[in-house]
Amino acid sequence: MSTNFIDRAIGYFSPQRGAARAQARVRMAMAEAGGVALGAYTGDHGTGGNKPLRRNWQPAARDANADTLRALPTQRGQSRELARTHPIAVGAMNTLLDRVVGTGLALVAQPDRKLLGWSEDQATEWKAAVQREFSLWADSTECDLTLAGNFYDRQRLVLESMRESGDCFTLLPEAEPTSTMPYRLRLQLLEADRIGNPHGRADSDEIAGGVRCDARGRPLAYHVYDRHPGAVLAGRGSLTAGRWAGRWIEQRGPSGRQRLLHHWLPTRPEQRRGVPWLAPIIALLKDLDTYTDAEIKAAVVSAFFTVFITTEGGNPAPIFTGAQQADGPAADQIGLGPGAVVGLAKGEDAKFANPNRPNTAFDPFVQAILQQIGMALGIPFELLLKRFNSSYSASKAALLDAWMFFRGQRTWLARSFCQPVYETWLAEAVGAGRVAAPGFFSDPLLRWAYSRAAWIGDSQGSINPKDEVAAYTAAIEANLMTHERAEWELFGSDWNETTDAKISERRRLDAAGLVPQPKPGAAAPAGPREPAEEET
Image 1 (cartoon, rainbow, N blue to C red):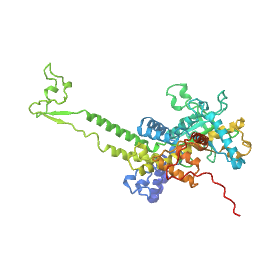
Image 2 (image 1 turned 90 degrees about the vertical axis):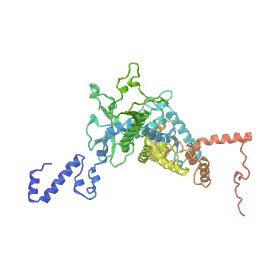
Image 3 (image 1 turned 180 degrees about the vertical axis):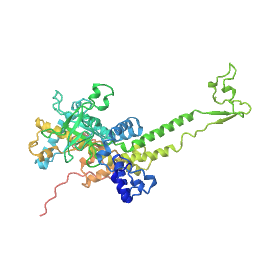
């Protein structure tokens, strides 16, 4: 690195200060280039300078956007490729989607009846009416602008796209009602690449990753490309010129209605865009794929049994050189036969190739790598491989650990997608008069009270259903858990919706005399408790 006149002058009169200035300039240059800081070679404490194996590892301390935005296009492509073709990535993604979304997260309206001044019967009646109306919209593919799926199908796609690309977006446009769909609200999912800076410009403090923020860092609007940039082939003339054409869409309209939802999980303050789920293990998965492919090819090659014929003079036998009789076997027809006896000429010896395949160390090595992959993804090794060879307690611990991760993902999906969509739909339903909610638009507190909801999904499953049902029963009898919560966790169903069916079944069984009799020695079922007489 060249020095200027001032640096040379200072170095002439004070070599120590001149060296310090030179080091500082090199540090600044390396930091700007994203390279290695000089501390790795000068032995600075805390930089690894005294560690030869880490002296070249000096990542620059950049902000969240500088660390993520530049690498995102490549990481998205790599992540999607792995999620389509790599068996481990495909299995991990399917496990995530099946356990988090499954058959879909169902709405359970939970209005705050105390704040609304309702009786229990009023709250139950309102909940049933709202859930029926919401099902009218959510169960139909007309809720989606492209008619590609209903609300529950979109849940799975939101989670999958967010995990593959780091984030995704949902537009909430309106369309004309139809004879089968009285609501105007529609869903339009956008892939992460559809949001970017206008004309592909570089990021700035105001606009980065296609997100425009105010001075406090609050997102105001998103720039949506008219088409996916990857759908335009190079050299297509006018199409190439319009590759980055798009428009700004504000997150909320003038009335405060949601217009766009950003689905992502920030990992650092002031971050604008999300990072793919597979980003930390992309290189590891690709190397594992290469290693597995090499082992498979080696095993295939070893299946072709090879014999080498050696001679004293080092010359090949005449039969392999084409010097055989005209009616003899051709050189390319020489091979081993089952139970054949082959005579060798004087001085010839047979050597057999033994490539030692399959590799006995392959499985333990791959398992060690998969354990690291499982830790990075939050999925235990046993569940990642769908192999439960350990004890019951170990398998149960693995499932419980995985369920903590899946429950967090389910909560995120409900907060990021399900609840905002429900609140937008509910506002339209109230405005159209299809749902009664006095004071909904005049008081924010009342609006919150009407909009409260829970989103329940499939249960986590059970290894020993008998013991687990007994544990839930004991918790209910000890007043530590409600019937509603127990049914959610055990079976993923809504107790409020199944109660009527249970009552009807019990009445029919009683009428037919089919109620199961208690087993000998079992406690008789407790009947209705009589009120205690007052003491005189």
